[in-house]
Amino acid sequence: MGAKTQLTGTVVSDRMQRTVVVAVERQVRHSLYGKSLRRTSTFLAHNADDEAKAGDTVEIAESRPLSRRKRWVVTRVVSRAPQV
Image (cartoon, rainbow, N blue to C red):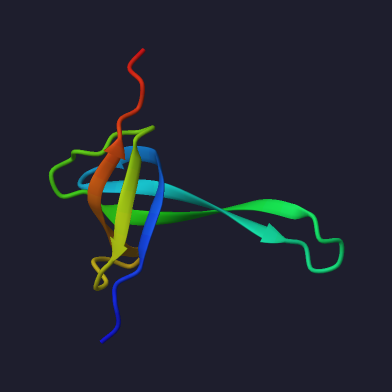
C-alpha cells in the first residue's frame, strides 16, 4: 500500500454539509510552444467539523470513496481567509 497523496489548495465553496470544494492549481508546459500554463482541478473533500470555510487554504489527503465524487479529506487548514 503506497503513501496517500497530499495536495494544497483553496476552498472555493463550503455550501454543502461536511463537504468543501477545493481548487488545486498546477503549472504545465505547453507541449509545442513551451509556454507555462496554469491549470486548475477541483476536488470534493470531506470537511468533518466544518472547520474550513470559503477562501481558506487547506491541505487535503486521498481517502477511500466517501460518495460518488468525494475521495479526499481535509487534513488541516493551512491559512484562514482574510475577514472583511
